[in-house]
Image (cartoon, rainbow, N blue to C red):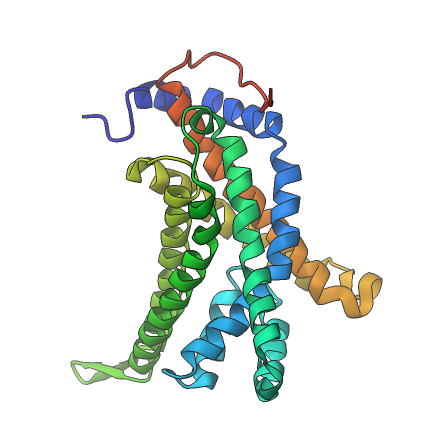
Length: 299
């Protein structure tokens, strides 16, 4: 039974050859250049997006609880910098009366920029799909705002589940007269919740952003690949920022922005690398697995 595709056996027999082919395809598609563009626009988008989410959800959930949840899961996106981002969010929320329609519309626009650039990058990696079928421009225009709504709902659910797990952490388990705290268990569950949410969001990105319908198994393969690589990179970044980095000395007041930009660029690189893995799987079913990847070109 083939779970991934007709060429899964070839990939399993030659994993290093497939990895090299994927990296060559990523390089041919200028993956690092596209990741830099995504990171730049993501830096412009992340704060307006979070402000909109907190403003909307604060009518349903306590604002402080939202900020605590955001701080916990922002560590998955910007290792070591979540405290500074949450502090800026709290400062804005303390003066939310300055929010007018012009500022609201501008924040909505900037919060969508990263999704638009990401869609364009995906069209380069999945150029074999674009050559066959193109997406209507109205759908492309609506996708970013659909994702903003989707992430807002996801944040609401994560906050509710995190609150339940934190409540479990305060409980005691008594067996044979001995008592054990469930704090460690709730901590592990919170981490696994964040990891599962990360894989779920990545899977949705791979399902929605490329043109045409993508196999759920292929999307999950790319999502798990990107998520595991990001977890390794995230811990490496935490160690680097806490031990070796002189970023605070070099950049001063720009430290947070530079550190977040670096994290976003690494994350965007792995996101696109996961997409390249999926694209190579797809092309393997139509092309010679040994053929060299061709760079993206326009006529």
